[in-house]
Image (tube, rainbow, N blue to C red; front, top):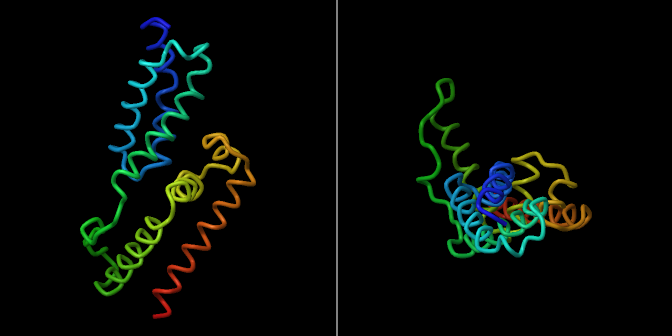
Length: 166
């Protein structure tokens, strides 16, 4: 694959690759880093891709792999610094602090899930993707996605119940 053909193909699929990376990661900056790394890998392996139409599938697999590697390298933990401390106009300070504490607890519970569970929860609940879309991105079946999401939600409920029942 020559440079011109590569750049045309990559420019067509870049937005989809970025969306996939955002589904796996919490940070747009991290997602952009993953896209850049993916582009590098695609360029290096451009001769192994039989046809430009297969580029999106190959890129999706690479994005998933690079995202998981990034998450493994820096296992995310959330701190109080990441929760905004500005009170809302019509809400008192106590309510604001309680809401921030709940947000922090939820973030900590989500960060304790496996990388795959985090990605599926994010794709389903933040990105509002269908089970079919998630299955296509992850290269699995809808029933597998449903099962993983169910286990992730059960884990989140158990962790949050532990806190509230203490």
